[in-house]
Image 1 (cartoon, helix red, strand yellow):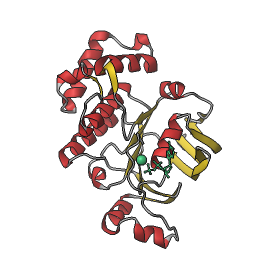
Image 2 (cartoon, protein in one colour):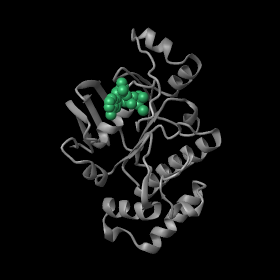
Image 3 (cartoon, protein in one colour):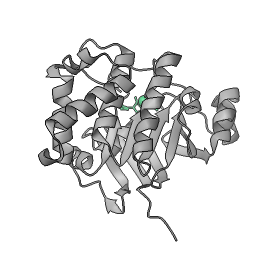
Image 4 (tube, protein in one colour):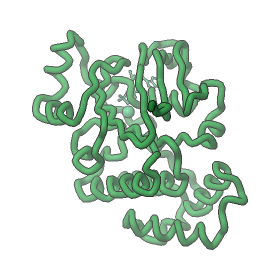
Length: 266
Ligand SMILES: Nc1ncnc2c1ncn2[C@@H]1O[C@H](COP(=O)(O)OP(=O)(O)O)[C@@H](O)[C@H]1O
Ligand SMILES: [Mg+2]
């Protein structure tokens, strides 16, 4: 018996402002699998995440992307969300004037349909999820990400994941800028959503091995210069932890210099 893949990326090429950033990405996620995508800053990880969600700035010039066998590239971002794709942003933006609770209610309604949620049930679920993420209840009425610290923004992203219950969760560096306790809380958030829906696929993008001590990947990929250059099991994580990216890239004959970390919303 073969399982139909949940998500398939084939020979994906993506350009930003006329410059080719992704140069042939292949990746298949089966139901329930956790894939870690690692790589240096500037290797193209966020470009992949943004392109998969349909960000208009990221032009797909070649290749295909399928969700449960259906080609998603013709779908607008909101349709991708309705069909079960979710992206947690590396650098979430603030939305002044829009309360986090109201935002989530509107998002759940838009994705799952108005009849799918009962107001009382929604509040109960929200309160529970916030407590699990160790978020103060006052966050429900605060404007989304407005004045949130880095760690609070990441928790708010995980809260969206928990409330939206996607089929494929693309998490772009949910651990960046977090101290070890916050990494653990965010990881537990991811794991608990996964336990409730064991068929959900996860594409966990990270620069560091740390979060992978808590969220165990089935497959680990290394991205360099817009391609996945190596895939393996958790032994690859250990190797990267002890050697860094240099030796593995040198062995593959890839010269890559790390880009300065940007803060412009990517
Ligand atoms: N919106 C954008 N505008 C201009 N250049 C971009 C944009 N997004 C990504 N890039 C470029 O694409 C390359 C890969 O960046 P990115 O995907 O953010 O890498 P990573 O997430 O692995 O750090 C970089 O050279 C970056 O400058
Ligand atoms: Mg990035």
